[in-house]
Image (cartoon, rainbow, N blue to C red; front, side, top):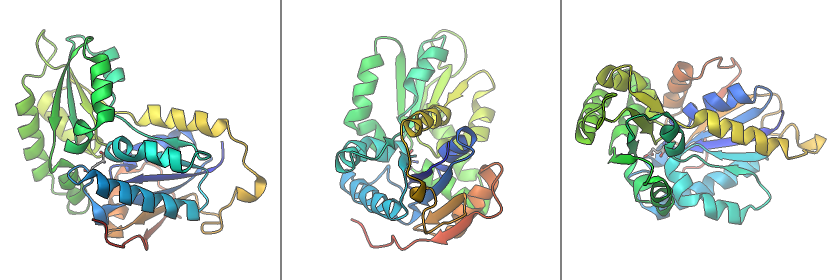
Length: 283
Ligand code: DGL
């Protein structure tokens, strides 16, 4: 499957989705925008996230993307419906906390959900939660500051803030384990959180299952792309004629570069890291 796919997140978190996309669609090309200059989304207003999502969408369309993956739970919750209405012709795939996959895995029927404040407050998440509430008990936890701590650790390699925040939030959620009454499955409902897997595993032990949505989003993207026929002249967008991966940041491109080198397996040598022009201020 070929095609040029645009992917964005408030920062480096969406690289956890990009990993899965590149594994599922090895022939496709990707443009990734980390909106680090305007992050975190999860602790800002819906209006801010909507303005940023629209600006990024416009930038990605300038590159003639043929599909968009919103690799951010918060932006999906706030903006996907509006973006789909604005661009009905474009396949737009979003990401939501993996509550359904967690249900299939949990034996204790007590499931933890870590996400941003904004995702948890969204109507989209509340509807999803209500639709499954009779099947398990979900313990939800807003994790202020965690995405930001993961963002900072990408270049500093200092994980002490990640450890402290994970300890604080998992403690607040109660007891983890495989006995009745314990949380045996934890949903990582923000695309940054898979990059705290090591710290969480160390705290919770190997029996607690950590669940995120990258592979499911990648499969969904492949299905959507398969339904499209791309004209030959759109196969190579002019801004990246031969490049398989273009990574743009509205913040410090070095942070994105460090994160990609660390967390993107098989990073092509020709990947480009650029600070992009999307830096007009947003409220
Ligand atoms: N990675 C984003 C998400 O999945 C949000 C992180 C943030 O900017 O707060 O929700």
